[in-house]
Image (cartoon, rainbow over all chains, first blue to last red; front, side):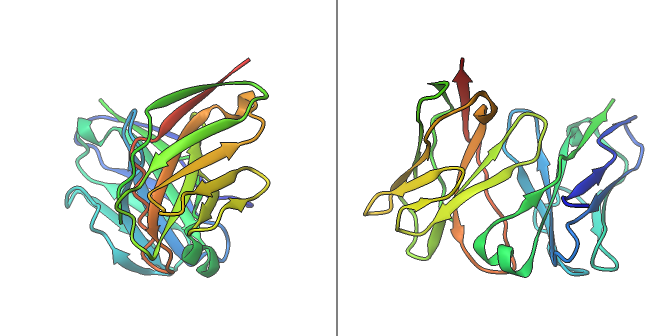
Amino acid sequence: GAGVSQSPRYKVAKRGQDVALRCDPISGHVSLFWYQQALGQGPEFLTYFQNEAQLDKSGLPSDRFFAERPEGSVSTLKIQRTQQEDSAVYLCASSSRTSGSTGELFFGEGSRLTVL
Amino acid sequence: DAKTTQPPSMDCAEGRAANLPCNHSTISGNEYVYWYRQIHSQGPQYIIHGLKNNETNEMASLIITEDRKSSTLILPHATLRDTAVYYCIVRVAKAGANNLFFGTGTRLTVIP
């Protein structure tokens, strides 16, 4: 597709369930980012991939959060044993080698996770 | 990366220019100023960026003061579709770690 695609758009999980959120970046984009956005706040960085390598995971809030990008394209953010504080919109962004150096990230519409 | 300060909210009449200020008094010499916006229920959208010269593109103009401690994003003729949260971000431009610190931004409401 032309843009970054995320699925599902909406996910409701019971506390303690595992969830998986998918991101399809723009074709050919080497860099991929995950952000978490709580209600009323700006997006906060979670993790960054360059191709299949996870170069920065400093923003992951706990070891319940895990991200992968095994073939350097599609990425999955997995949250284990979800807690209510995990409720947020999870945004994926990608950038080309060129746009990455200029700071232009292309964001998807996000996956809204609600943990009951 | 340096932090930024923005007013939490602003209103603008439709058709008028919207001037969104940003303070970044601790900006370093190699840090750029970026602006993104986020329309309700969408992901952030890149608008413009600059180092020290004023910049203009099809969406907006960016005016950076000579001392680079503040900047203004200008939407020359605001429309209702420009209602969004606008984020001012400063960071070093380099390929690789592109961790953008968004802060809470300015909520711009364009009024008919």
